Image (tube, rainbow, N blue to C red; front, side):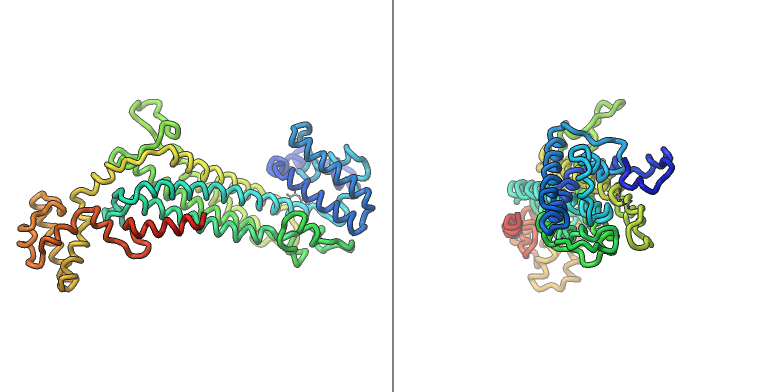
Length: 455
Ligand code: ARG
């Protein structure tokens, strides 16, 4: 059954049927489509556009259909053009000609835009839940690692020691911004197009505010042409998602590096790694690599929707049907990646001894020794020079800076004293950075309080 058969004298070409069907992509909208129809039917009855008894019968049939879908008693017919036709067809099977009244003052154009927004708003909540679970992991783990030393890097070279807690909490704040962006986007997603009809509005005296309230939308579209053509919210969501994926990929990259034998800072569990068919010693960090690799899907989806929309004239054009392919590709990917990141982290073991070992003799305490001379009155340039020479001395004599003797230090500069030695252990170096947002346990404790207040 077609929703538009009247005019047509020839059958649609079978390849066109297949080519133009969106069912495979939009089947997942079945539930929101029913919810949207229930709200629309109720409103039609309440304002008297159709008799309220008839509206009541439509609503009951839709509610039954919802129940039957959930219980698996009915299935989507794969030959339907899209999910909207499928639901309407099922309504006909239930209540006959009365089903035809549901589509009064409505078009698939405002219907599909409403369904997609309603679905996405719900999915944003699920995604936020995944991200919050990740944030929770960072807090929980950071709490155990205030004093765990880790080389802090710039240019991938040892720069200054930081705590593992501080490093993990950096990700907490990335995901915090992601959550804030998603919730901002969600506000704009919940802007109701239903009631715009095909493109120009309708002569029927709709109560759009009632529908918005019923469906938990927070506003009603102001312009019917814009309402049926607008897919900005998909661009926005996919852009948010691309940022989340970028964050996940940075963490994945660190986990891949840190699980290398050269680092061994982290051990990824057998549950999330795979072996090689030829090299028996291998344990590959596939989950991290796949998250890193799947960035391509989400970036592709963002470019995909931007390209579909570019130069598209008003109002609805069938091009817009492609929107959901991009949206769902991006959505499914970002959801599974944020979930799997947590699974991988929950199973990971942090090898704190190896982190500490990697700091020995790395000179990442050199800045602090320079600061010591500066505090004693030496100009920074001169201090920098002295420490440069000190490092050179250590390299030549194969001694770690933190192991240098007082006599050796004094020979390098007369301002060095007993107190200079106390500065040098990496732990002391890390603990000394207590500026707001710094890596010292005291500063990280403040950060953790701020983070906990947000969860
Ligand atoms: N399946 C279509 C889509 O996803 C529904 C809207 C069709 N509207 C139309 N006038 N052909 O965009």
